[in-house]
Length: 72
Image 1 (tube, one colour):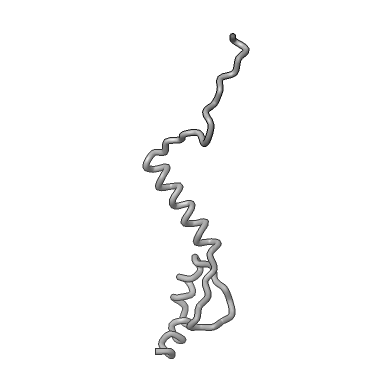
Image 2 (cartoon, helix red, strand yellow):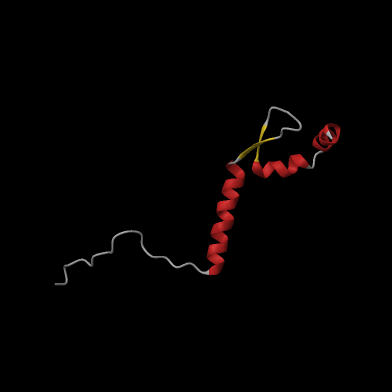
């Protein structure tokens, strides 16, 4: 009797996350997405693909602002 193993249930084990853990998991997913997603600036036509995280840095550059105003 003591030599028998307890059977585990089938499927994924149930894991209950707290609100803080859920928030942290969503933040990690968003960071991973932002670092891997590519973006191309049609205004500047630099021929360079930026990461989505670097998009915001590019949009604030003088070069982009000058090109955006020239196209208006």
